[in-house]
Image (cartoon, rainbow over all chains, first blue to last red; front, side):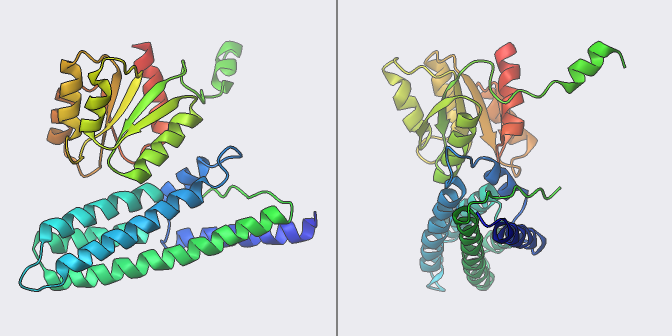
Length: 157
Length: 141
């Protein structure tokens, strides 16, 4: 094990994950999620966020269909999708996605189609950004493990 | 502080439930089912899942289901948490049932859910920190 390389990678990982919290991509629930990962379930976080991103893709697609025709918007279906995304984003600590969902719900409540379309675009953007960022984070984790190191626990308190 | 008090204050918090629990996790969201199953695993229990309240009721219908604890989500399709809890209590199910609500639920909604026959309610997202002491407290009761 090259301790200098491991140390550099670990610092890079810490700095990156801290930046994700500071930029509002993640909140404390992501910390809780990481606590549930251990040697018995080494890929737990990746598996859960993968479920989340699959959910996002499907729900966003369904909501897009519901919002397509200006004269025939199914706001109940859109609201249901927003509710689901808000719940799942809260569960994984996807703070920006959750915040967009809060605004999205308000647009649904007043049946504002244009507002909903803007929120839909925003939530699509935010989940894809987060997906990219977390993939980079998981890649760093893999590099640390392959170099013989351990993943640092980062406390945001 | 006396020596006894010092010793007690240094005791670590429990990391597992007082007895190994067999848990049913009832939630329509796959992510929550995965998360809650992992929490239960980490506190020393084993779990089974159901995708909604109706599935939970069906599991108990033949009388062979035996869960120490049921984590019951409030909002689910087919049969919601309150209806499922009420039905299970009518079927003489004596498992501890903890209702899982959201922060958006108000006091009246939580009270109505409790009225269905819950032992307690917790708001999502669940964590080891909020679930474990509650379970141990309910086991003591």
